[in-house]
Length: 475
Image 1 (cartoon, one colour):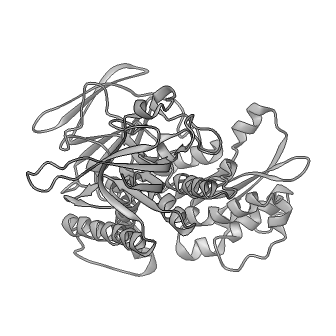
Image 2 (image 1 turned 90 degrees about the horizontal axis):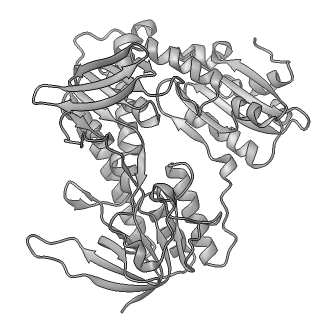
């Protein structure tokens, strides 16, 4: 039986990064991954194959198309007879995905990581049973491997709506919504979280009538309230029908359309659409892992129990990413993978969960790190805040992107930054400065006294920091 220092089960952004870091540290490493893309093994998991990367490719395409239709005339650019080629859009998306997944395979070769293409499951606390992908009609035989350390990075799967399984045609999950062969005339999105809003905005920009059904009466409750209210107005203006307090009770479909039954404050309602995207969350992917053989403890919802260092209740077994507690974010999984690999190698691996950035890739984008005003108020923390709108930013005017703002929250006594919230153009890039500032315990005054290049969007962060002390320059 071949033995490894580290076996990683799962090749997504947590697993493949953990394998690379372990190999960098001189550990004999294997990564078992079962993902198939168009019938071929592909590293990168959900994120690279049917999640983060392909969705952003479509978001960028839809943004270009929307600007062409609605904004380019303001720049003096006139294009007549423009049209959307959905087939080409999807081909480009797949090319982006394939390029990046192929890049990871090259990195595995570079670092001498054994990529075991197939399924992995526990056969004991230190043993993994690996079943290769079948070749043709030939059934593959399992092979058992032993490892001093095992890292579970099996990710998550979409949650289906009760009694309405995904059919890939009328009722789809996020993967299905990434692969429509034409723009649906109407689309119902069940759930108003990140996935639902991002994919809903893609198809709305391309011409679909999009209705977003949200069970709660509050829009984006995890986002700072000032920004969530602004985003509700922005997305509504873009054409998305945001239906708060709309609780779906059933979804049915036939060859022509799909029907969503729901209740709102006026009673029972029905919505007939071409397609339904169910985006009500994701569940940890532990099916078939045989955690019982290893003696792993599971938490409510099927998550693998881990401590603050991602150690399970069994010595030498770790779990990271979507399969454990915390936000289901690719960068959180990657950071945990690095920390675990370093811990195994005897180093001080660490993840600061207080400075993990969150992003919603609509347009305008929303990004934040740290606490919201409502969280701090509920906790009784005394704070000050500064807000600066992009309407006062020169680069935003030059680009024609004036929606949104930067909000900085600081401790009232120490001025330490407690949270930064951005709604606006390129918020996903701007939030990086805030993450670094908070990682090093910066104050709002530190940001206020840091020179920012002009003209840039980042000047809005500088102005928001000045606004904490009620001394902004351009509002």
